[in-house]
Image (cartoon, rainbow, N blue to C red; front, side, top):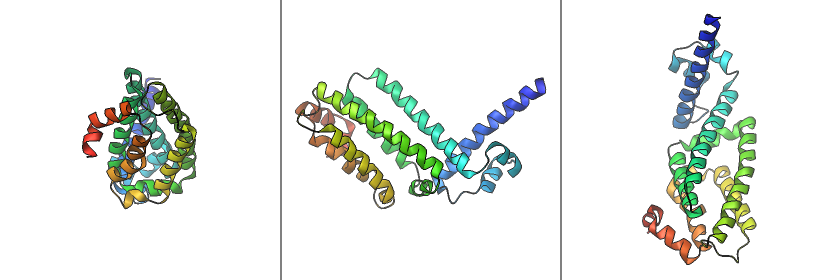
Length: 211
């Protein structure tokens, strides 16, 4: 019984180490450039052991994307619960996304489009993100940061479409992360802010960087 427990604990630990090493390599070099052989060598394990834990590269990538995406969402939820202002939440989410995306090779975002299971997960999460973003926009109106005379359902749909366009057109390979995200979110955000909302942006680090 003790031996079984030790084996299970080892495999659980190894599964986590494989995930960490693989996602780090994918982020640095792109998914296509990293073979399962490379991952096995990085961890000094056999290919057989690797395939016993992850049946193929798509499953490994899928598990990694889900794990790190959920961890990022968990951290953001904790921030949301502590923040009293919807503007603080939106600006914090913007900054985190710039940092997270900026640390990843643009090839990663191109390569993951080749994996249906990963694409399906991201599409479902995008639908949830749309509902959440719309809720934040409507909350911003109630808190006085956003103008009332705006169709925010349309705005949320447009942001969703722009995000898809950025990925599909590989704009992250052609422009800096800061330029892409400033133009797709920060500049439009200013357009439907009230004076109160604009003041928050101007007083933030983003407002100072944008000048």
